[in-house]
Length: 209
Image (cartoon, rainbow, N blue to C red; front, top):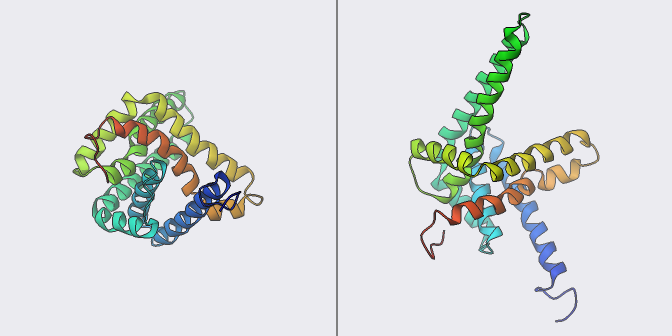
């Protein structure tokens, strides 16, 4: 079959990818509903996204739940740790905002810098867990090292995540359908191109996942 309806045509390939992202987003939203399972859901999301950017899609749903099941325990621990870090940071910022002396500004800058460094590693937690088998301790350590060693790409990932979040917030009502259909999967898919390039340098030759 020729023309745009050819399964190999750019148009059909694009529509197929859009459909995959929509379904991936739906799976992630459903699996995040219990909240405590959000870590496993995000890990599975990164697992499938990394396969998608490499053209190793396979069976999307099967791959998603394979990762969800295999990484559930570690992903849950990392998710709860991330929530704890953000909660402590929120409380600290709240108390700093109540201070009137000149130290408030210094403390706010210092806390922001520390939180930023933590998040530089944090954004690699779930992609690393999705890609490599390792202990939680080593995953956190390696994530921090990757965040620093690949700082320009780390900033690009931040720009993608923060930029998309700001866009969603500013145009919430207009973009509500997009947020529901691909609000999580789209930015993760975009960031996966950066993660994939970084991870290739760490992978044994011809290793598949």
